[in-house]
Length: 307
Image (tube, rainbow, N blue to C red; front, side, top):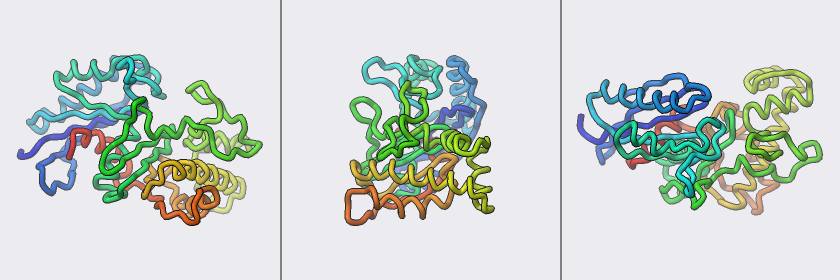
């Protein structure tokens, strides 16, 4: 094998995935050489560590090579304490994940927020390749965001750059205030309204029916008026939330990932709505789906060591 082996690990709430990419310093296309995944040991910190080690060592044994390791995690490593913070996988919070992984794997490890890894992947060779400023968005079990500017992933002095999901929804309507409670201890966070569970909760509040986002979308496409109304509310909220990001960051491209991003109607409807809220005479920011889909986060984790 020629080139440098880059191993990326995506630490998700239900599964942990690892891949290996090769970097030869030339025109490598980021082809995946190996992929493994295992269930996430729910609420088990030490089990999570052991699973990551098992995945990395398994890939290295399969390929017969030693690689760099990048980890995409929910939350972030605190600059003050070196411990994990802000993770909705709460067993990670307050734990020395970075140090423990470096010790367990006997090498330096780079860690970044999973949405940061997603944004990095899509800016390198994904849907936003070539764009100067990229905002990557995860709309899934939670809501995350990452920023890549001039080819560089931004973390910020507090390691929270891009964390739009824990801001309040912009221009709230009366029925949206004060908003649902969030695991972070506040109410009305964007995450509580724009995550997949947030859409399902909103539909239940208005209709009394418990449906998944996929079911809501299918019924809306079949002419169900209540499901259509749920999606219309969701699209307007997404437009308002992203308009605030555009007003501050003014990105060239916003890339959507996560389960809710599979709603193709978002890419036409939301840009038609956000012009009402953006402080500009026109909006040239593009809203696009992720090119690498569910693989973007783990690819970005691998590229934390460079490409």
